[in-house]
Image (tube, rainbow, N blue to C red; front, side):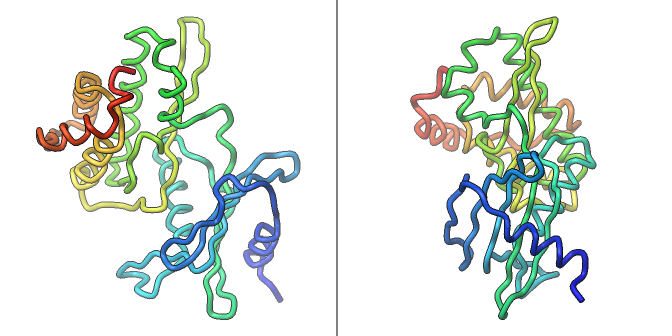
Length: 245
């Protein structure tokens, strides 16, 4: 007789909706995300077939959604905003792993890259923009102090929601795409992985980056190694159109 976990897996596996991310081939398997309406609630369903991550604990691999679901639960426990997991699980069918992750919709959020490219920065005062950097510093330091790293830290994986408040604009930030997220032995280990990665895959100006780092290191209570001049030059050449946003 099927267990409740197996029934839940089959239920979500058989839902359907428009593709947000078309199935792509990675890790010798496929992974894709659909937008699904379930009992009037918008959710996102990630389906994987043979899409595995390997570790000392799982040398033969298991679907990456299992690690991502655990990471999402961990971040929410830490008070770091992220999509809330509704269900995640894995089954082997004819020797092939299937994995599924169902998350709640982050209503009103968009990724930072899109927000900047659509002129979001130009609609803010300097103090309001610094407030975003301050909130991001708090978000990242909270995660790292808990010895947890994102693993694929890019500005496009940071989502923002702008609200109108009595004192002006208010901001909410959240982290997404946590397939590679996991714990570390130390806070510095997590920081030294994620922060240089974020610098390489973001388009803040040097002064904005330094403002973010000052706030981040103050909150972390530790200093991490600065990017080298060569890496800063590579970063400048990577996003020339966005430098003065």
